[in-house]
Image (cartoon, rainbow, N blue to C red; front, side, top):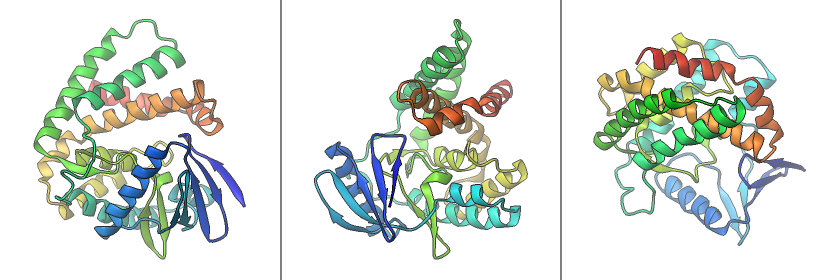
Length: 277
C-alpha cells in the first residue's frame, strides 16, 4: 500500500489492483464522479469506478502515469511520438463533443483567463521572485488574455484543463485520462499547450511541431488556428508557475517546491514568447 498526496487536498491510497481517492470536499468528489460518468458514456478512456462513498471512491488501478514512465527510463523520440499521438487522438474525442451544454460544466471565460494571470503575478512574480514593479506584466496580461478570449468566443470545446503527463496513464497501450474534475468549456488550444508545454517533460521543438500538425490534421479545427497556439502556450505556462509558487509557498508541497526551484526554463520560455507577440 502506498499513500500519495496530490497538489490539491485530495489523497490517494494505492493498492495492488485498486486506488482509493479520498476527498473531504463532497462537491469536488461529486464533480469527479459526474465527469467520469460523462466521459465514459462518451467512450473516453478513464479509470473504472468500483464503489462510491461520501468522502472517497474506489477506482481501477491502471498503473504508473506517463511522467513516471519517462522518469524511470529515458525514452527516444519515436516512443514519445507514438505515445503523444495516441493522447492527441483521445483528447480530440473530447474536443469534438457537442453535447456538453446544460451538463453543468463551467466556462473557461474572460474571468478565468484573467484569474490565471493574477495568480501568476501574485504568487510567482511578487511572492517568489520578489519583483516590486509588475506594470509591464499587466500590459502583457491584456494582450494574451484578450487574444485567448477572442479565440474562445469563436471556437469553444470541452477541455480537460490540466492535460499533462502526470494526468495520463497508458493501460493496455491506450491512454487513459485522470484528474479531470476541473473540466470546463474552453478552447482546445489550452489542452494542446498543456500537453506539449508540460514542465515535467521537455519535448523537443520539432516533436511539438509535428504533434501540432497531427492535431490539426485529425481534428475538425482549421490549421490556421495554429498561429494562435503561442498565446495559449503563454496562458498555460503562467498558470503553471502560479500553481508551483502557490503550492510551494502556501501549502508547503515538497514535489512543487522542487519543481519551483527548477522553474527558470519555464519563465524564460514565457518571456521569449512575449517578445515575439
